[in-house]
Length: 199
Image (cartoon, rainbow, N blue to C red):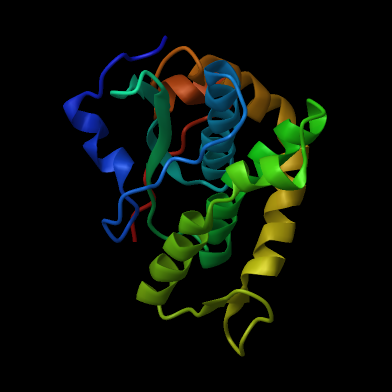
């Protein structure tokens, strides 16, 4: 179900982990196509979170109409984890873009231009920041000694996205209608929303 206006709890959805506002991309898609693409993105995050033992708090997308009559759409998946491998946290960060890309490919709309609509550099930057707090370096290309490579993490995430595609697809369809709690998302995907692991 589309929201015609933003609700107060959506405020955090409009900025990245550093507080920088997201800039909506202009793509030649219908609103429904944009929403479905972002639903696959968020479903990728949520499903891999649950697969890796990360507790999902909420997941969803929201669209709102702006002054010129067009629509903006953003998505968000919030989660909480303790005692989870840094590689797994980074992989779930990579999963959103990968799920979006697979959706575009399977629907025959993956081109160089449409692939840009799936780019999620903010997810990579968030993963870099999160791992840095744990003393782990996440590089874009080759892994440093004792660190991780985003390229390798993305390869791991891609295999998981493929293995869990039916769960991601089921959740994505539901997310086009409504925001979900983590437990609701788990029920739709046929998974278990893990409890928060405490140290």
